[in-house]
Image (cartoon, rainbow over all chains, first blue to last red; front, side, top):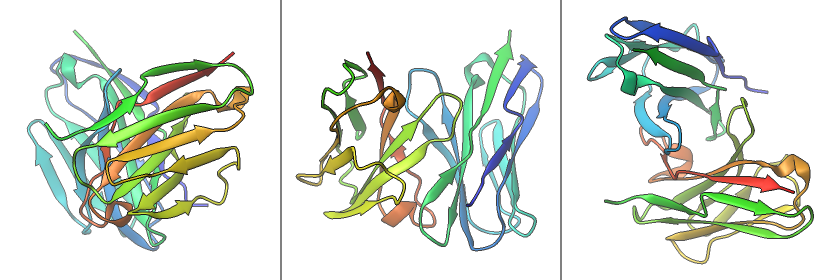
Length: 111
Length: 116
């Protein structure tokens, strides 16, 4: 069984503060790591797809890093805004070509 | 805008009464997926199509079937829904098999299924 773990499960952050959360995955047979943002009543939206150890990607105030040797990825949000409130899902693509999702981190920004 | 559309957004059905959920896409992607997500759990892949090639997950109940009549449409049929099938059902597409290495998946808004 290939487990993708996300922590914390939920997080409350004051508007303007920065935050980060973690996705852990088995490092063997790794191919890619996906991050999605899922706002309530909307569809999950792809943020990043990362494949290489040491990859760093950035989209506005959101960035992500990848460590494939130790099996983790961090998602960072700088200067949180109310519109950042969402569930952030990570998913790992292993050798069997199937995305395995974590349970997500539910982020709430407090105005 | 190209997109993935799921209908209906909310579906209520009776215990044991067959139900069909639909998904359409304008992205012309060759891979389509169905996921089931229960509250506070990770989305779980039920099956996927690579073009017309159907791939069922080993632990997907026989109660769940799928059809893909053409590139644009994919259906999820639940033959005899039980209370345990109440969940959010997500349809997704990608331009390469299982998301490839660099291809993200594109999701619909989901159908929330309730069983009475």
